[in-house]
Amino acid sequence: MSEPENIVELCGVTRTYKLGREKLPVLRGVDWEIRRGEWMCLLGASGSGKTTLLNLVGALERPDSGMVRIAGIDVSKLNRRQAAQFRNRRIGFVFQAYHLLPELTIQENVMLPGELAGLSRGASKERARELLTTVGLADRMRHRPAELSGGEQQRAAIARALFNEPELLLADEPTGNLDAATGESILTLFGELRTRHPERSIMMITHNREIAKLADRTSELIDGRLKGR
Image (cartoon, rainbow, N blue to C red; front, side):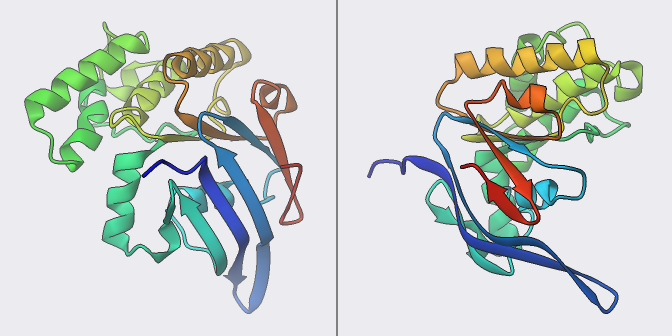
């Protein structure tokens, strides 16, 4: 059976949050898709719902209504355990704040997805070594996050996201905490990784229109609805 053309498909997705007695509609009937091998950029102002949409695509949240299908699977129907297994196996996450565990070395941080997947420690260690070499951190593997610059920490986070060779890479403002030059080097790294694995899809959210120009296609989230598909 062939893989579906779209890695991401959203149909009629809504999401509302409760703030006390008030209801805050964030997504209002979103229809969207990302094709396999595509770099999609999602633009939007702060508070527009970009991260909510990314969390739905990453099976971290469920929609109030509508369908979220990733790699042909309706992830909104998965239970928590199934969703966690799906994320670890098929999706990689890169966050603005890196989310590295401070008590672990960089290599140990990158090994975590392998250990969660039941890979042996030796195999996880070797895979982490390969990835850290790929992102230019071969000489920093035994350091802890606090001993690295912001750019180095983000490179380590990218290596961790790639551990299980995900079909879909989700990046939430990956240069948001970095200076311009370091941010540019991270975007260059994304481009290099994509060249090596053109079959992998990327969803990147940002408020920066210059960054969005790097993508194959851009959508903008305004008042809970997407403009441009």
